[in-house]
Length: 230
Image (cartoon, rainbow, N blue to C red; front, side, top):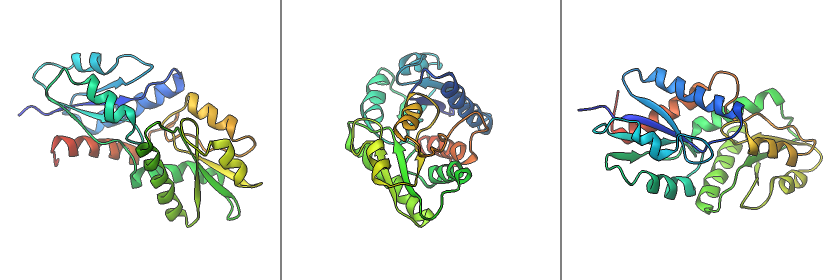
């Protein structure tokens, strides 16, 4: 039986730093799966898009699409299905979140900011027109709060309320922002702007080595969808 290819699909970004960060994650995944064809494509902004990425994988090779998306919004529920409809041997894995390993990565990014017990914590998320995706992010905020033993508010950057600037203002004079974004780019820059003077943690991926927890998560999403145990 042919081992399925892994097609990692990111949102896409015009930020060179964001592009490099996502590519680094996919390279780390490929290193963990030396006998698997691993490719990177994008649902928006960048090329290759989903259709071109699938066309580049040999016919007859089954494909598992792993969305490099933190919640299951429109891109996962509609775009990926529509854009892969022309090929019958495609399985779409679940979105990355919610998942404890994303909480691990959030905590690792927050730790250098050393939030004090009296600081309010706000989770900055992109936001979606599909409230099921927004609820995924609210679940992640609750998971983060449970791990830290404190309340974590949610601030949206688009499409939902409360907006991040409103959530930061509601937090009072001492606020620290956790950045629930995969990589640098437009939304991270917007998070910094809307947070005002509040410190903002980096996105989950950056110029450093991808967190092992994120690599594990992508690999597990692939194996689960492919029905592989090794």
